Amino acid sequence: MCKITLSYNENNALARRKLALLLSTGLFTQITEPMQESNDDAKQYRELRDAFFSGSRKSMSQVIANF
Image (cartoon, rainbow, N blue to C red):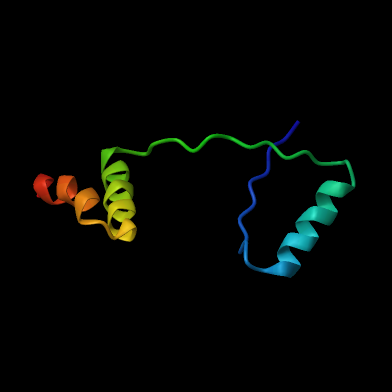
């Protein structure tokens, strides 16, 4: 069995339809793999992003304290 990785614009309706059609043939299966942490920088970035978008001073206080 071979493995194929596809990337597509998830907002593109045509791409989603074509992918659904391909999977509906039964010739292919979809395997979801959990996202892996690439490194600590990525984790810190996500924490900073999440705190920023929450808009709360309380949630930002820990992030600001780390700088």
